[in-house]
Image (cartoon, rainbow, N blue to C red):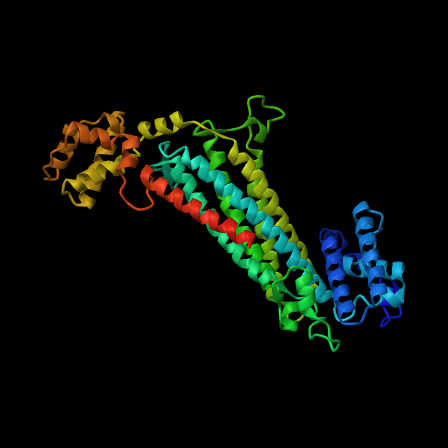
Length: 471
């Protein structure tokens, strides 16, 4: 529309207009943009710039624009972005005398920031609620698996005996930290940039507190230059969403590995798995693999945002338009990944027998044997050496750890000048997987009693999170 180009004598080259445009991405914030214009127009009515009759016309035009945008009736082809498109629509519906007042005291710069604060805030709230539901589900599964023993890994090699409940609590704690991080970003997202104009405010006495209240903000992002040019609030918000995605991706990779024939710890339900078009035996964890891929994409978007913002001078630059698209995509990815992951996790079919078999077939309980010798008065380093030699001997002879006798252990100790007495029962307890976890005494260990305590504690924290969202 020519009315926007008073400074220039010619219309912009259509190809260049398309090049700098963001209308496709802007459609994702179009309804929010309409809400922002409604709030700003209502405020302009309050301060006497728009009269009651004109406000009714503007609000009616905005709701008509909403319907026409949703239905596709408005042709967006060739439009640069959503903000002038909607203003142009209002002017066409109401005339320049009425519609031409809606942009008073604001610019695209503060308007788009208000849009993005609302978009990321609303998305973060949805993600947070879904995340809390996932945590609650993991706690319920953990409650049922306090004695489901399995090997824990370091370097993807058998390390110690743990339980599936203990493993799930590892991710419950990580997800609770993710939830805490997301919750804290809401403070800044709930500050209103609208009314800052391009960068230095307006000589017209508008009421920023009014638009804040109308749009559900808790306050004003005061400094007008900061309000329109900062991107740290948005970058901080999506950084926390990417951290959540990384947590989900790591757990997804565990599930992928554990569902293989070689591990066989679990199976994915049919409704969350895919097939091969050529290999009839396949049951593929495609959903989890796509989760990992989308996490990489979100991380790439985050790096793109940081690299773009890091080299910009103070004030708005069009480069920031590209940041907007990346921010929107990260929120969308986080939301869809969390939903998909929750469905997969809720339908995992555990194979407890296989988990226990792997423990007994290998030498995961060597640490427990070492600690038994420590309790007999042997220094840890010597005990470590003794058990290491014993494991090597068992491997050479093709024997399991459960096949050793007290005599075997006593003889290994004697070789380095250590005399100990070990009974059949205490050796049996040490080489039993469930006995191993019950023997743990440290805070945070897989001992079922300690796991039960942690579950109660995490449920309490979860209740507080849900309560905070009500407020």
